[in-house]
Amino acid sequence: MKKLLAKLLLAVAFTGAVGLGSTAALAQDASAPVAASEASAPAPAAATATPAAAPAAQAAAPAAAAPVPPNKGDTAWLLTCTAFVILMTLPGLGLFYGGLVRSKNMLSVLMQCFIIFSLVVVLWAIYGYSIAFTEGGAFFGGFDRLFLKGMTPDSVAATFSKGVNVPEYAYMAFQAAFAAITCALIVGAFAERARFSAVLLFTVIWFTFSYLPMAHMVWFWPGPDAYTDAAAADAANAHAGWLFQKGALDYAGGTVVHINAAIAGLVGSYMVGKRVGFGKEAFKPHSLTMTMIGASLLWFGWFGFNAGSGLEANGGAALAFVNTLLATAAATLSWTAGEWIGKGKPSMLGGASGAVAGLVAVTPAAGFVGPMGSIVLGLLAGLICLWGVNGLKRLLKADDALDVFGVHGVGGMLGAILTGVFAAPSLGGTGIYDYVANAVSKDYSIAGQVWIQFQGVLTTLVWSGVVAFIAFKIADILLGLRVPEDEEREGLDITSHGESAYHN
Image (cartoon, rainbow, N blue to C red):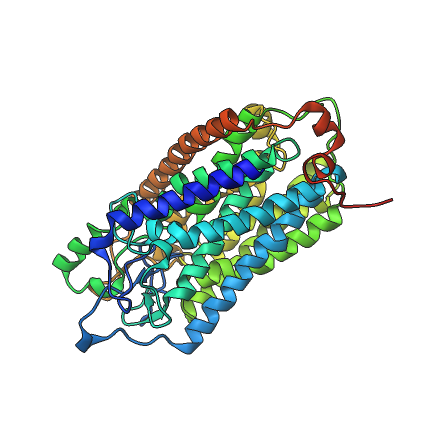
């Protein structure tokens, strides 16, 4: 463990040194933040545009035209939502996953979630935020914000309304919480048998080369104030992320968070291998009470995850909040009904899983679809993800221990693609906001948008899958992905961490 920590510290130091050395000439004035971003925008209200989950830091402006000071209400809302998202991981996801594993592995899951969260947040401040949300190329950002260089309490980030800003520190923290939970989601796929040090090394590599570029591709743009006329819009789009340029809609992370994590988890479940006794022994959850509490905390925190992604306390946030509420409830009902019909009894595990499936599916759609669209999306998510953790799982022949791909992968793909359908104004959606015309575009094409959404899904699957394979391979060569069989049988709580969750 000491050797691993030393390697990680050396890698971080090397990354920072190279970044600072290569970008010294690009240093900015501390009062002029850099560009950051999100997806194409809808119009929840005539005077307000509230698109996807990430903002754009206000470009450097002349002293005579200082950025508009942040609204205190928006600032308070964004900070509150950040705390909600942190609650999703600590303790929400940890308890949800922990209840699903056997009691001898409870602490190992909690530990992975806790340490991954802490690790990613630190890496985010050192280089993650800069690579994801500053101007660079179509796939990676730049190094202008390494070590949060130039960021001050007066630095601002743009929202999705012209002339509206939030403190860049608040935006940076909000996105840090997103990055952390995405990395933590992955561990459920290979729970109960992975080596702790290998999980951490994998996390560093995958976060750097999959999460950061995907966030940049989908969410980076120069911000609404750059779209003053057609020529300016073309110039601004040329500096946006690759999928943003294509017009992909992802309000809060269907591709960036859920599909990204799910395919990495699926790859990991294959590469780590099946648990000892898989297919022969019953791997029953040791505490559905913990799982229910975890699911409830996830649902609660998800209001910050989705409703906070517009970065303003306005009607767009209210729409995302309502859609999150409705889609989750609908998915809970449809999963429970499907299980009741198929197995003869409704289960608490089914209800909790249905809720998470609805939360996942509505994530990319939260600020783009209408309330009735979110209900339909939730109903479909509950049933299709129920198939994902049963029929599809058998077809894949993978030991995805906690059904990361069946829920987050299937639900994320469903939500991402159907966002293209239900975002249509004719179906109650917000449409896509035209920042040049300052109005909702009148030529929304469902078929065209679905095709764009499909490209976003495919890009995420391929990119994350390849990076995950390489990252797991490196971790396996250097450290070994899996614990020895005797340690796995005894349980990772004792063998990896020297303690037990429960004492008789």
